Image 1: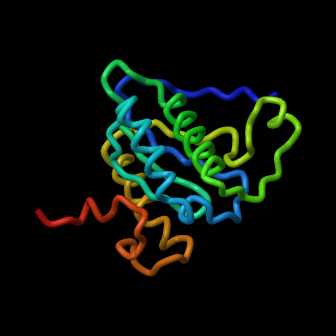
Image 2 (image 1 turned 45 degrees about the vertical axis):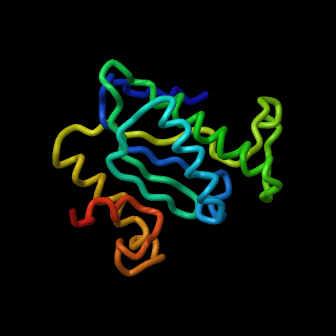
Image 3 (image 1 turned 30 degrees about the vertical axis):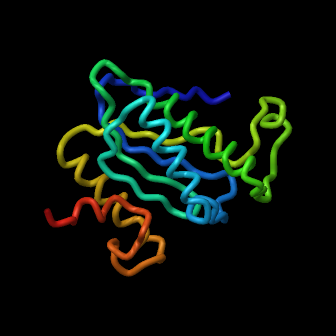
Length: 162
């Protein structure tokens, strides 16, 4: 059995990749309103500062800064994933899911990959690189030519003129 070790630093800044079980799915952008509600609800209950985020068809990249004294990003992602899954299933949308016996035994519906990937941001250069990675991901995947053309990204917030 793999030994998953996470670095928990209260008030830390992290880069995350959270992925659907079906890597060919468009569920996150097709059901973006459900994802937005799940995200806003969880972040209002357990605040984080979203430094950057991009929602791709089958995965999310985000850079979060946690509150001082708080290092619990795992519970936040679990709550977002659970809320989104319940909302789409209760809303009558039933994606094609391949649910393994082990997931079924644990009451999982199979929308998401079980785990997520995280990286603790080390310094300003690392922060800038991961924010840029979020914003450029739709270009990298060939969905758009310019990051600004992808509607599900915080890049719009970064370039807004005040």
